Length: 230
Image (cartoon, rainbow, N blue to C red; front, side, top):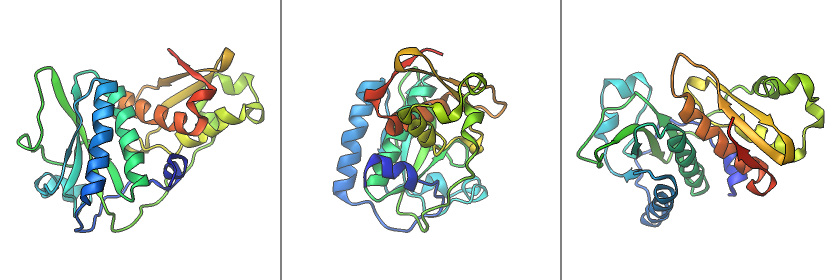
């Protein structure tokens, strides 16, 4: 499975089989985690065979079951966008390896003896991993023009470059907190793209922005554009 195929195949999964992750897959995930931590200045850690985080009432309220593996998304305070970007990079890799996943902000109990959080760092969230009892379902797709801001009024949707359209289609498939999708993309001159998080009362806006930016890169192809500050 390619990353592009993983973008389409990935759905949030909350119920998992009691099946351990194979050693070779754990090795591949840890290799990619090391690269993500180095590039992003993060401290992401893979926790396996640990069911306590998802054994309490909060997990049941969130309809989670069978979760015993997760990514502890540890990083500096204020690194929300990087957490989203590199976390989704790991999510899509996991999908190509046959695993399912789900971003989790609240429906788990912290287990500080299972991962290390250094001074100046925090546990931003976790990502459940494993073999899903199901493959999940696709969320409702909203019209692309709702995510183009002012550009939608000055640029016909049908005239968008193919690479930008592919990027937007991938971004619209990205997971966001309670499916709020509070983001906006703008195509600028010289194949540059600006992305920004819209206001949200729920929070997680910057983390969601990192997630959708990684999806956009996978869909559009990093060779076709460059990011600029919004």
